[in-house]
Structure formats: C-alpha cells, structure tokens
Length: 267
Image (tube, rainbow, N blue to C red):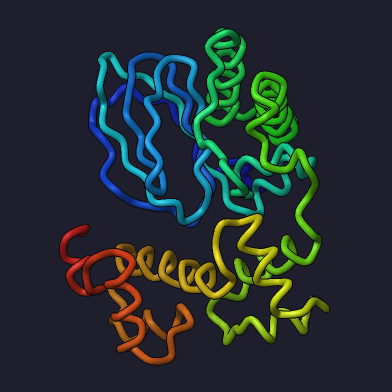
C-alpha cells in the first residue's frame, strides 16, 4: 500500500525553524499561537486559522511570536500530490508561483472545519483503516476546496492552466534530474521551442528550467550528505554533477557552505 502523504504530523514543540528547503511540497496549518514565516523573501505573520503552502525548493524559516504554538503539517512528494489531488487548479497552490502569489491563506472563519479535516487526516495517517488512501485523499481535497472558496483570488491558476508541456517537463526533471539535461533537449522532447518553454516554465513555477534542474540535484545531494557516508565526489556524480568542482560551487552558492562543511554542521 503506497502512502498518501510523506508525513502528517501534529506538533506542539516551541522551536523556531531555521532557514531550509525541501524537495517535497509542504502544508502548515496554525491551530494556535503566532509565528513569523519568511518564504522566499516574503514575510507572513501566521496565527490561528492560517494555512501556508510551501513548494519544492522554497527556502523558508519561522520565528514563534506567541505561545502556545500548535500546528499541523503535511508533506507530499510530487507523485503523491498528483495521485492524491486530481484537479490541477487545487494542486496549483503547491506548484505554481505566478504574479503576486501569497503563500499564506486566512481560514479563521472556517477554523473549526479546517481543524476537523486535519485532525481526521492525522488519525487516518496514524491508524489506517480500510480505504485509508481514498479517505486521506478526500480529506485533503476537501481542505483545498475550503481554501479555494475562502480565498479564490489566491489560487494561481484562476486565469488559466499551465501548458501541458510545463507540467510534463517538471515531472520529467523530478524523475531524471541525475541524467544529462538541457533546455534544448527538454524542448525537443516535449515539442516546444526552447524560448517558449523557458518563459512558460518560469511563469508557472517561479524558476527557469536550468535553475529547477540544479535545485533538484542539490536537494537530493543534501539528502545523501545527511543519510549516507558516500564521498562528496560520489554524491556529485549520483546527483548529476559530473564535475565535483561545479558541484561544490553550486552547493556553496545555494546553501552558503561546502558539501563537507554542510555535512559536518548538520550531522
């Protein structure tokens, strides 16, 4: 049985969150208290009833401003999100970053309903019963519908849907990041001009295809640095960097530390 979510957790810990990013999508719901979130340079004071959607590779941190601080958070891989939520517009709050997108949604007027949906997701995740996958998918879809009804203007796909090629290229990079990839090869594979692909990909995801490839590789490199004893050179090759010096340079540019120093600091 394949899990619907990567994680589904209720937390009352009082630790602030240092700057970091994930290779998965994340949803955070504040049940009580207040925290100041910084996501890709945008600041949000999130209190009771606030729901935050964080996409892959979006750097974020949080400083707690008011206690007690209670929240739910859910993480999903790209494949889990696609399987779990069938409607592209509902998925768009995790994926698409167009115009003046805001990561924070205010659901205070529907806080009781949102809390109940999230608590049901936690219960089903921790104590799965018959048809648990279907129930968890339905619960998340209901939560997203609640967001869509409360904050329609914040859904990035209201004026249209991303071209199919953008979604296909994004999925292809997620699966093949360790292979040689270039804008020209991707454009040819999905029958779109390189300039149009670059423009549309950045418009809907917030990244150029080249930057998205690099972030995919670095995200997986970070995971291997923390979960394996493989050498820096071996990790570079496994993540698609065939020149270790380029890997070290790119890693330091994104994280502020070399791979070796990052491993030492985090382990």
